[in-house]
Image (cartoon, protein in one colour):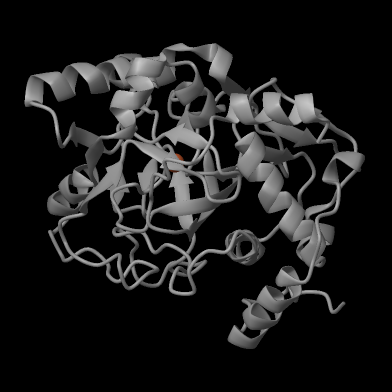
Length: 357
Ligand SMILES: [Fe+2]
C-alpha cells in the first residue's frame, strides 16, 4: 500500500487515493503500542519512543485506527511528535476522511485569519499574548485581569454551521511551568445526567454565536470576517447557528452534551430565564467535575489530537505574561445531528463487555 505523502500539502489526487485506501482498510490495534489511559473516561497517551506520528501519517490503517481511538477516548496525546504545521493539517484532514466526513468539509479558516500568515490560512496560531497576529494584543500579566479557568471551557468553532470533527495542537513556545490544557468528556457529561434531564435535552436545540470574535474584529477596523471558512456552508458575517443540544458522534455512535460556555448563548425552545438557568447548570457540570476531565502538561514535541464533537477543552491562564504559543489545525466534520437510536457510551461499553465483544 502506497504511503501518504506527508512532506507537502496533500494534492487532490492524494486525498482521493487516501479515501479509497481507507475504505478498504481494517483497523489496527494502536493499543499494542506503549501507552496509558490518563483517566477511565477520557485521554490516552502514547509514550515517548513508541508509536510515532510519522508512522501513523504514512499508514492509512493507522490513520483510521487513530481516528477511531480519538473519537472513543476524546483526546489522544503523543509525547515525542516531531510534526510540522503542514503535517498537522494533513493529519486532521485524513482523520476526518477516515471518519467519513462530507467531501465539502475541508480545513477550517478562522473568521479572523489575517492574509499572509506564515503557515497559511488553515493554521491558527494559539497564543496567550496575541490573537491572530500581533495586531490583537491580549491583557495578561495581572492576576486580577486573568480569565477564570471556569470561563475558558469550549469546543472549537461551534458557531459554524459545519463545525469541527478533529483538531490538533502543538505548543511550540513552552513556558517552564503553567499553561496546561484540560479536556472534558461530552459522553460522560451526558451519561452523568438523570434520565428525565437527558430526555428533555434530547429534544432541544441551542443557538451558538461567535460574537466574541466579532467584537475583536470591530475593535481592529471592522473589516468583513473571512468566508467561506473551509466549507461552502460556513459563510456569512453573523457567525450564528443552531445545533442540537445532544449530539451523536458518527464514529462511535455515542451521545454527548453539545453546549459550551464559549459559544452557546440560548436554548431555542425555552424562555430566556429557563435557558439561562439550564445553561448555567450545564456549563458548571462541565467545568466543575474533575472526574470527567483530563489535565495535560505540555512538553517539547507534545501533540494533542481531540474530537471536538464529543469533548470540551480549556487552557489555563496562569502565565503572568510568559509567552505560550502553538499551532492548531482544525478539520471540519458534518452538520451536527442527534440520532434517537444512538447510544450512551457507558451503556454501549457495558453491553459490549457483557457480550464479550
Ligand atoms: Fe479551543
